Length: 360
Image (cartoon, rainbow, N blue to C red; front, top):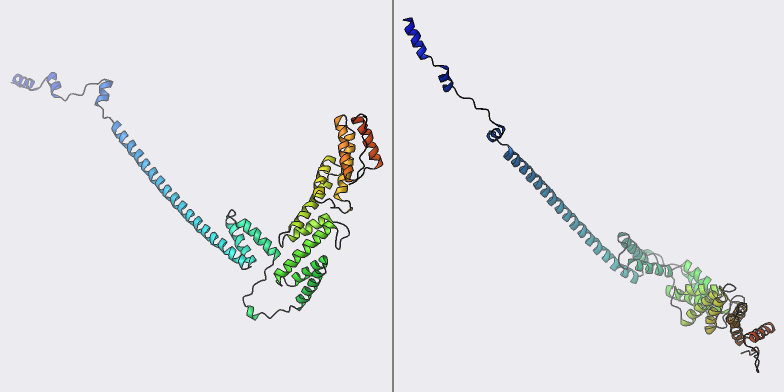
């Protein structure tokens, strides 16, 4: 019985080989290549994340650039609009300057121009117009306007009238220096008193006193070239100089320039005094020496300088002395020098040369 049961038991228990076939099989060990092929690949997911991040950053940068460009454009347009508005306002102020000048409101015109230059130093014509205003303001001071002229009492002008009458008498007497003093007193007492007439008297006094100083006439026994030039220059503030006054001023300047080369550069002194003698031979300086006399002396000194040379340069002294003799007869010393040098430069012939003695 036991044997039968044991047999039965033995028949029911599977053997090890059968058991191995019925159990789930563990995967066989794979080679490295097979392992890579069977593992999930994360590459696609990394590419997706990187692309998204780059796209997001590009979008942020594009939005920032667009915003900055819009802001810059807005700022540029606002600045341009402000500049156009300021230029328009400055142009309107510049137009009003001419109206102020025509009305004699020089102080107001000056304030407008200073404001324009302060806003735009390169505003066209502003600097030139300001210079014009300053000159007019200096020549013809403008009276200070009052808001209630009807309440201002009538000014007492008896003092001004007395000074003006005195100035008229001095003008008749050609007393130019005292006339200038009276006009200064009148202008100080009332800058607006008969402005046009007073300016004309200033011009006449300065112009004529300048000529008297240059020519040594009138109240001036000796010449004063510098003082005459100064008076004529002041006269130009009140009106343009006539041809005689302007020409005489130029000759006085030429005389002063020529005298600056005296004892320094004899050739230049000779050339400069030649120009003065051509137009004003009797023009003289405070030493009472005329331009012709200056040229004569300069030619003698220039000849002495040339005579110290050699050869042809030495003989050029004859030309300088000969030109001097046409202005004034040579003295005995220079006649002797001329003969001696002429014998050296021009050997004796049948008709020996003699020193010129003509005196035109």
